[in-house]
Image 1 (tube, one colour):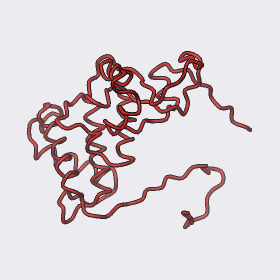
Image 2: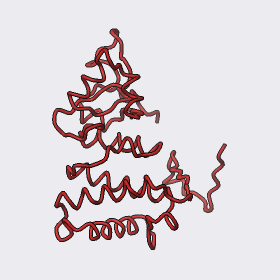
Image 3: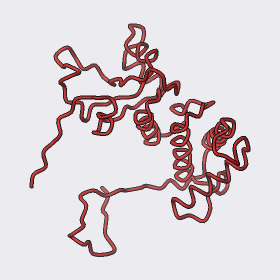
Image 4: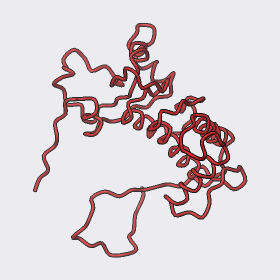
Length: 217
């Protein structure tokens, strides 16, 4: 159980019914995290995006470290195994991946094999929003794929998709997911996928039917 105590009184005129909770993991970063972060930055440099630092690995690293520190009110971020920590490194990698997805950067490593826990699901969400295959990264022929069979009684056009787990797949990987040799459960386990609950933003992008809950006044 987690108990949250507020240091100051809450102004009830501007209250919120949700709280963001970040649990920091201050252990040293892993070699896998470090290699993955530098691999993404090398991919970004190779893609020739970003003006004056295009093609310059060190300039790309300096730019994103400065951006991360500015966005998170930090003095510095280290990717060394001696000074770096896992939480900042995971957040830094997520920032790099969001940039890569938004700018069609071809990645040399498959993110779903590199990311830990909630950061993997965050990447899956970004793939859905940016319409990129969560496995191969292509933006061609992206389809919304359910993470479990919806059954014959459900109509894709009429069922309420809110809360259903889904992912973004290209047509080829979507076919693989439903093939007799694979099946959804084996497919999810093989590619280390968790699935993302459909929200209104995802539903709008993929034209999924939803039923919004009416808020009581």
